[in-house]
Length: 178
Image 1 (cartoon, rainbow, N blue to C red):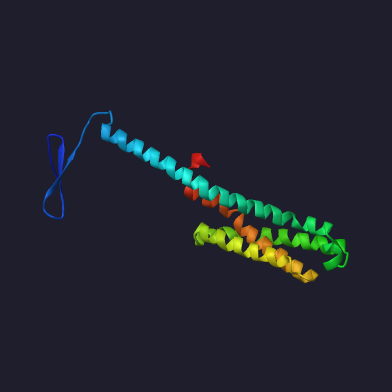
Image 2: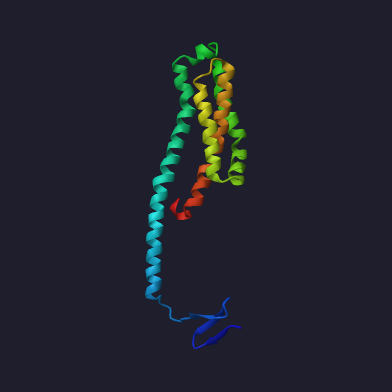
């Protein structure tokens, strides 16, 4: 069905007309190919700048929030949370600190699985929502059990966030750009 004559190939189409494709054996690209490549390179640079302007600042702010949430118990201890909510016990304070890391370790793999099952952007939003709500509610706790529950949920949320961000970057950036 396909015919080749003098370097041109005739391909059938649905309207029973033939489209002509010119096959060139010259090793140098034509001016159209150079123009197309420069347009693609310019569009790629523009897209990368947009990605850098949106994705990187958002994930940086989320990482900053995660860092502050991990260290907020030290600041709370200076303000007397150990005396007010934990009965002045160093053991209770250590348990509250450990609850975060236990949840973080246990939910790290399920967080990765969630990121692969859902879209990474959805998984990031869910993780940030869980840990944001738990961090906010931590200010309203009035006993040791409330601190424990909040620290567990902060650990669960951050476990879903930590490994998902690099995965999210691999979707938007090339290997050499990361």
